[in-house]
Amino acid sequence: MNFAQDSNIWLVIWALGLGTFGLRFLFLGLVGDRKMPVWVLRHLRYTAVGLLPGLIAPMVLWPDATGGMLDWPRLIAAIVTLAVGYKTKNIFAAILLGGICLYTIGQMV
Image 1: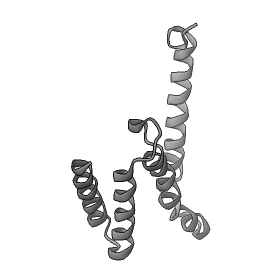
Image 2: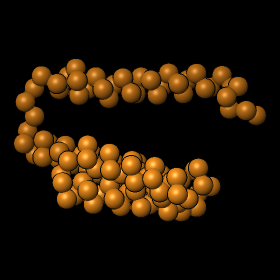
Image 3: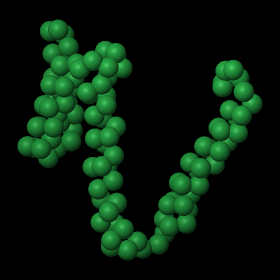
Image 4: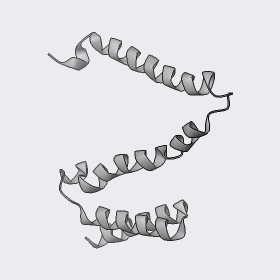
């Protein structure tokens, strides 16, 4: 049985759509014009710091392009990006130099 051909897929699509809308509406529609407590703002400050490594680490350590094998150009570019970002505190410089490093090392390999 192919799940994509099953009629339940529309139920899943609608449920995910309503869930996504509900989460966004909660913060933008209901809470968006209210002053949030200090403790909430303090925790929200770390959302990107906690989320981005979880999204990026699998792409660096187990990339699908290499069948899950470690890819040295990606790993070196990630290290360069982290070092430049830490040293300069400039996200644009980190992204630019990390991309240049990935492209340069990728051309050499």
